[in-house]
Image (cartoon, rainbow, N blue to C red; front, side, top):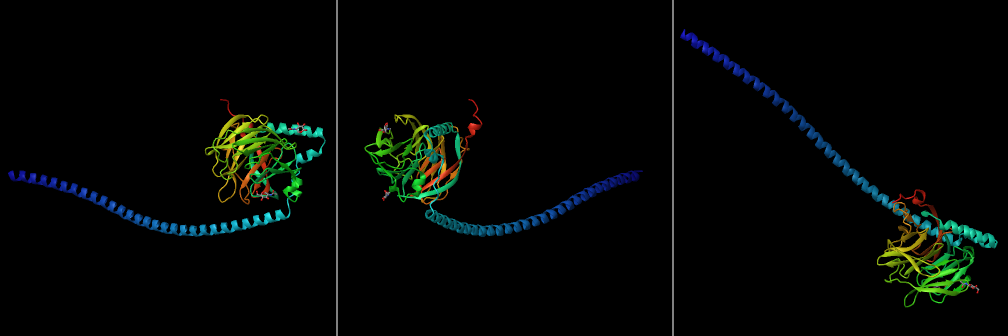
Length: 397
Ligand SMILES: *[C@@H]1O[C@H](CO)[C@@H](O)[C@H](O)[C@H]1NC(C)=O
Ligand SMILES: *[C@@H]1O[C@H](CO)[C@@H](O)[C@H](O)[C@H]1NC(C)=O
């Protein structure tokens, strides 16, 4: 009986043992299969990794090739551009030559013709023009065309037309006391020289290129002990009035035209003066009859690298250049009515010219700028568009 008992215990132990072994075996099988799966995955990763790194290498080589090719093409493009630049320069020079050989036809505009008409029509036309200009809400959108009218005098000077008559005035140099009057642009264009015009001698020499002519009056700045504004009647050759300008720092308005301390603009809205305060250009509105200063603004336009400015419908356009001169460009705009938004003001480039502008005088009737550039008398015809706020009124505050 005892032996049977032990035997049964042994059997049950053996059974347990084999069960344990069975469990162990299953565990081992399971682990092995997991290891095999992991190994497989590792092999796969390895392969992928190899592929990626070879792809990366290939990509890096391709990128290097591409960069090298781009570099070569860039070089070639630069050479081509330089070649084109030289050709453009040559064409411009040839055009200048042709233009000086065949002086362009003078612009006979409404005002030229107006003078030949009878006084009644003339008066009415003047009124219409006055009305049109005083309600004007225009902004310059582009420089539409350029015309070289003449080549007279020294590198710096002023030529301008009285917007109320057809008369054209030539101020040669930056400090003289004699100017020349022509009946029209046509007469000037046909003349053999500035001395063919009517000679007008001033009581004091002008200083700079800031003169303005409007409705038969010349406004100019002379430098005696102080900066003095002179109002002169051209027809009668008489001094009408004068005033000392309260300009503190005697620095030029535009750094590229050091002789011009004050730039004057005369139009139907009054007399405007541009002068520098520190490094910025300031604007004053004056009464053309009494020469009183009515209002002043800091335009926030820098005088540095500025060469000239022009004024259209209450908006000032300051023109900048580089040294040596390249293309003149409008880079600062100031609107006295605060109607022109900065984004609305166009970046205007002037056509490439000879040197730098010594003066730019806008004629509101003809919508063109009378420019003096290195002794050339040039007309720039402007395209205008309506100020945005003239179409869409600003929201009420
Ligand atoms: C114009 O000005 C220049 C220099 O200021 C002078 O040499 C030249 O004689 C002037 N021309 C006339 C016609 O006055
Ligand atoms: C110009 O002279 C005329 C005639 O002498 C005179 O009637 C007129 O008032 C003068 N004009 C000015 C602005 O001095």
